[in-house]
Image (cartoon, rainbow, N blue to C red):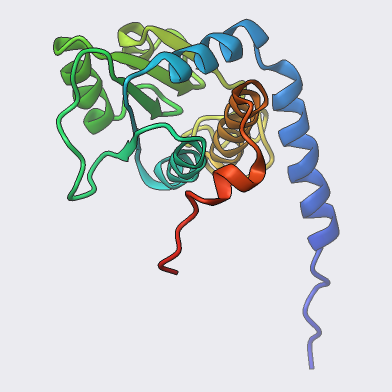
Amino acid sequence: MTTAPPLATATALSTIVDEIAGVAGRLDQDQMDAAARSLREADRVFVLGAGRSGLALSMTAMRLMHLGLDVYVVGDATTPAIAAGDLLLVASGSGTTAGILRSAETAVSVGARVLCLTTAPDSPLAALASDVVTIPAAQKQDRAGTASAQYAGGLFEQAVVVVGDALFHALWLVSGLTADEMWSRHSNLE
């Protein structure tokens, strides 16, 4: 009988935590501050990402809602039309995801601002954005293992969660709201 090789979960976890910390340490704080200001000043916030990036931004949308912002996840049946004064928060590692690019073009055409989280600050999506947070992580097509040991865009998607939580936390600190006040907005239908 052949024994299965040992699972290296502790090593995997350490690799992931180290990579996230490395990305966080290389984020441009001026870009992060500008992103937080854009979120705070928006009439309404719309979030959009494809795949795991979209799931990560849905988590950010929930936290921004807890803060009292009017937030919509693009594609939900109840999402209204975006308009001038609104902000479209998008995540695309490549900055070339077709559906996200089209939505950003629509947002800009009606006078909304675009906040882009990407690994590609020279991308078409970043060019449309009023604010860009460059996330120094591998794109999903980068399988060389030089920017990240993780599969596909894993590090980018994890960084989107962390960046979203950092933006939320910074806004919470200046909001004056207590955790109890925000909790009153937490879903009570679960």
